[in-house]
Amino acid sequence: VAMKLLLPGTGEGPVLKLSTLSLWGGVDPLSGRLSDPSLPHCGESVKGRVLMIAEPVGSSSSSAVLLELLHAGNAPAAIVLGRADAIVALGILVAREMGWATIPLAVMPLIEQERIADGAVLRVQ
Image (tube, rainbow, N blue to C red; front, side, top):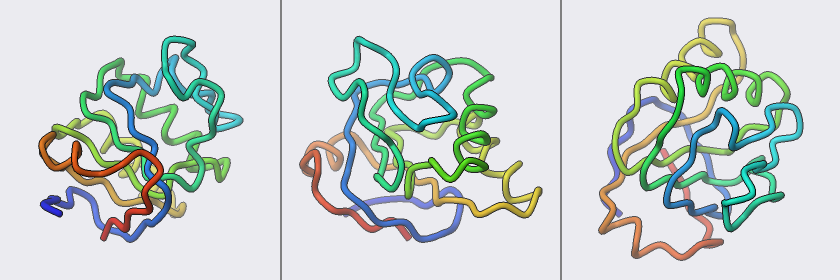
């Protein structure tokens, strides 16, 4: 699998594939559950999953949501994006600076993402 690691770490879990997601408004930072009713996985938890987002969108508040997920222990095991996103990276970097456990962040071309089934176990390292 062609994957470029942007932030180090190791994470493994079942893939939760989303074509698009804004963490702000799309994930409840306290429960870790997808809260956007337009998402096919609405209501499912991101905790322990490899969150695969083809097209990250959103707000600068997404980094704060990810920071809250990490602090509460409800974060995904790893995040794999279709393109690099500084806002997502910022949440992980701030958590690291605060001495909290963090997760790896990677980028994978969409053609490669299409080859991975939703729910398949993926290791990111």
